[in-house]
Length: 633
Image 1 (cartoon, helix red, strand yellow):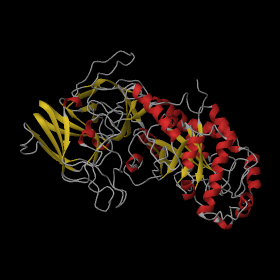
Image 2 (cartoon, helix red, strand yellow):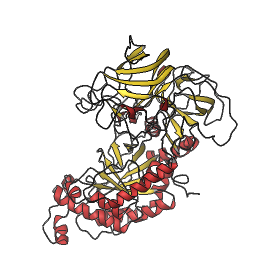
Image 3 (cartoon, one colour):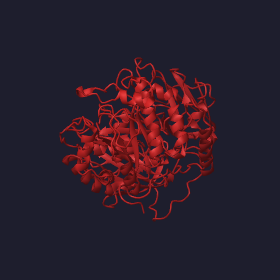
Image 4 (cartoon, one colour):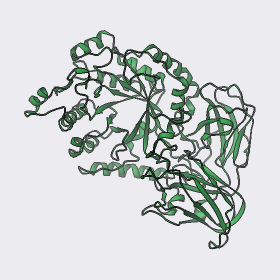
């Protein structure tokens, strides 16, 4: 994350290009058995520029269940299955990609393509190929779900796997109901798919199989299809491009899905969840409601943390969605159109790309912020739960605010700015799902350049020194080496005024206690000291407790002029039952505010001016072209 004056990616364009070239070079030279985390790679650009995807569970066990592959294929075709329908419905949801989950352990292990490999249901009609072609025509990509799991081979009293047929094909006995045998069968299918579908976007994998690992499957995929991406479900597998998190619940508010995410950016992260309020992930014959507040809230809060939202709908045998899901898609089409600029081409605000502070605001309000990926002075406030009063108050993160408007109506919103807060007044007519305010700023103010001070710490893990907490690089961080209490010291070089301390803690833990073993590794109790000589600290100038929340946090100080500042962390939120995170503290970036930002004059519409050296512009993300579901212009 970004140090001092901004949270944006600190690299220059030349450095970014160089890293991309090196990534490609090392990828090409990678030997079998190499497992590494490609945090940033050119093949990921499409996913990084995406907001969401449509998850399609569809197969032989889609109600009404079929046990004959030929019978299932006939009913699919006779029912009027058309790939354009799925692509258009994805377009209504403003999704950029589709994940087809048909080769699924609970859906009969069906393969919707003409396969030369016996072992489970495969069709004569090339449903997968037709979908890839239809999606490409509208600027979308298709990912193929692949399972590692044979345990449901006889679910429902029917044997879905054909070990005898696969054994004849391989010339030796192989039991597909074992993990080793199924691993080999699925391994062969990966290569058949890669050979047949070079335009596939990649694979969405439901956990690992030892056969794949010992045969270096993932390295071979990257070598054979360098443009494919790999995603894994519920497991942060380093070699894969993205981790997906299967439907998390229990947080408050219920729609704030990112509270359950435990992976730090810039790692690509996805949240997958069902749109039907009840029922299975696949069509079970029912037509449950879609909770609009919950679904749109999840979509928006994920965008507010740069997390991709994979939304699952339950396609029927003929491919069409039940009436209530189809109605939601039609509603979402127009609803998202009105606020699309605040979601697409933006990054989550309050994290590594800068932006206003998200989360829990005043008087019960809750929401997220987003910031343009190309213009650091264009921000959006997403108020999902409105305050109980006609005023909204949130931390300004040092940005000088010039203008606030209602995104839908264009009406100007009265505001004040002081003491580190932006306050919007005279509010009302809240949207039932997401009221969006557009905020124009004029850079940041009152933040001490990090080059003017040095860092030290009472403890640091190897490779994660104190300097990493203010080095302008979100790929590095300070780690306290599980030492508490622990201090982080700032030597300003000369006496300077300090009004607040800004912190971006590493987002590698949930922000609320999901269980005894899944808790938050964020600062709880703290003290701040000031010293002129770095030896005599006296009494704390501030102390308190930070809540366990995602995004940027602040510690305000009384007007203090000092050369040395010390943050002493007494405790963190994780309990001893979470042995992985107990006493662990990691800070990506921190910075010192010498004064609070003041409002700026309203600017005429013009291209954004270059940011000052103390506030670098965020590195632009790549963005899929055109409106999703419609031809790219």
